[in-house]
Image 1 (tube, one colour):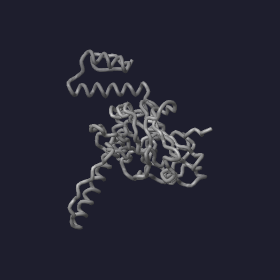
Image 2 (spheres, helix red, strand yellow):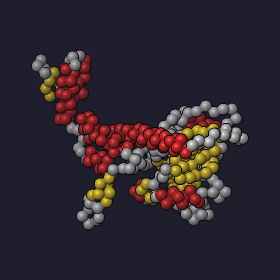
Image 3 (cartoon, rainbow, N blue to C red):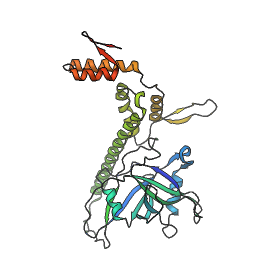
Image 4 (tube, rainbow, N blue to C red):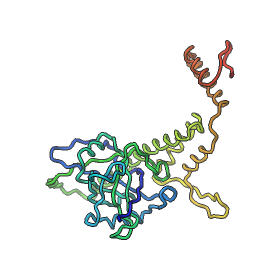
Length: 320
């Protein structure tokens, strides 16, 4: 009996900033390339820790002749494969995959952004290789990634890249030789451009992650608290190297590196939810702001009274 694969659902950052929707020329066969996994501790959710060594193990062990990883939607193991993994490799500390022979309907789902998340499937003890092996990948639509918001992984809406593949590629035009100084300048410019693109992607991803995490805290975070916390959290999460501090939460155990951003979110999560008395203050602030900008209409006043359980007097506002 073939062992069931371990499903790892998540998103990573190393995706191009450009729009992934492209026009394919007639006769082109699209390929799907994206990062599927990066090092992360999933002990609590999946009972495993994915290390860089494990990613290197899977990249070295992958052989389509042994088992070719298939593509599916939402971990649907029945029916035909929607694509086949041609190769996998390590890039920027992540495990990248390349799928070819794609189902046309699946290509359209990716093109129209109906399926923009991914979930890796791995065998922890493959019957042939005996170790970790990348067995497949599912594209996710509404399903939420299981590793959302865990530093240093910052979730975003991943952008898949459809790159045209031709059966008979044309030979590139030869380029004239350039001097050593010009070559160094060109390489430096390319490195700077790549770093800028990566910084842009990291910041966009951090902004989306902070927005989602603060929204999850709900009434525990008031608008003034969110206004102060958001720029700080974005800066912490957008850093290429996550900011940490050594803390000893348990006196019986040695100090460990703690993510500053994660600890801030834990503190905010421990704040009690806003109660009705706080709502009164929020109502006063909204009314005062409205008075400064020209007052509130009678209809808006009735909405505020109903929302915050206040009544209106001739001299101002008072609580019921």
